[in-house]
Length: 483
Ligand code: BG6
Image (cartoon, rainbow, N blue to C red; front, side, top):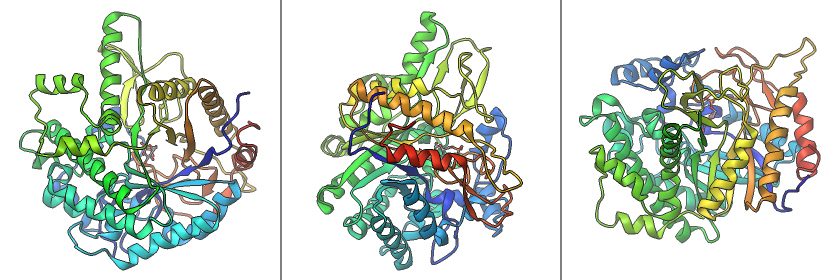
């Protein structure tokens, strides 16, 4: 069995909007995540509709302080329980923990000139807590949330003003926490603005006179520029700080070897890589530019943007990987949902209860492909299995399926390292059960740690160790040798 490097970082990933709760506590402002409703059992069409947000819908959501049907407002109360949760992560042997900072905890509307001291204090204590437990923070600045007012007043990232407001927020983070945090990510799954424009970009269709697709590209451009400016600021403010980009890695296979399927697959993969290309190479790839031109989509270039992108490329490339995807030109090909996508079903792969297809070899393929393309260190910052765990009468949770899932993925990571990939570390999604990003369910559980809370918020919020907890402890203690 090939081995992992000595300095390999093992840990988990969580996001503020899915775990903190305390949505109206200590001066935090509302964020786009606070209007996301609980939607169980989404069908493929509902899944798409779920992401279409209207001003009226937002007003309706904000007229209530309900947390039952707006589960991201309550999360798993990490805001108050983080010391005990960090103890559990330390017990697992984590050397890294990926968290995100809720922008609206620091800047409640996004427009303030000075940050909210209580918000600044919260994250300082959290990062000190990690330091005290020997856990390195890996911090995402923007993980599926921005102050709600930036969405309703400016149409989110479609408006260039948001760049400046974001850079102000980023600089606050670097100057407040730079002594405790070295590793940063600018935007979670930066490509996802194309698939869920509101969650990822604060975009509201009725505020997009030239259509949602054009606004998505505008938003993506603004995020690229903001990410590059934040990277430049990090280099000035935090000596030794490192910035990574974060891609939803959607490695796509052709459904058949028919050249039309292969060509469609190539287009999919190039479009997926485009988002990391801009951040890693500092320029838009020619193929994507040509495609935008053909479709009449304008990139809102301003003087200096090209230089900013070129001068501030990322130090490492991070990505989420849940499953591979499949492409076919056949409109009747069977389809299945996946991480922020609905794609063609691969007949060779098993699926989770939520239809996401499980493909450990695809992780090795992704690692080799990305390393060969970018020649920068890679970091897997999300990978995991959503499962409706069952609690036994004695309180235990037997989850051999989770062990099988992770073991198979770790084996493929080791093989990729053996093949020459420089892999810095791995953070599983999510080490502790939390609210699902797509459906706001609790019952879609990813954790090695169980949280006693159901979809409607009933439960004690007590944490307990699933069987897989002990297994992961052993994996980390042996640096990946005991799988
Ligand atoms: C990733 C997101 O796309 O997938 C996470 O970055 C999310 O925030 C994860 O939780 C799993 O998706 P879901 O919808 O099952 O929570």
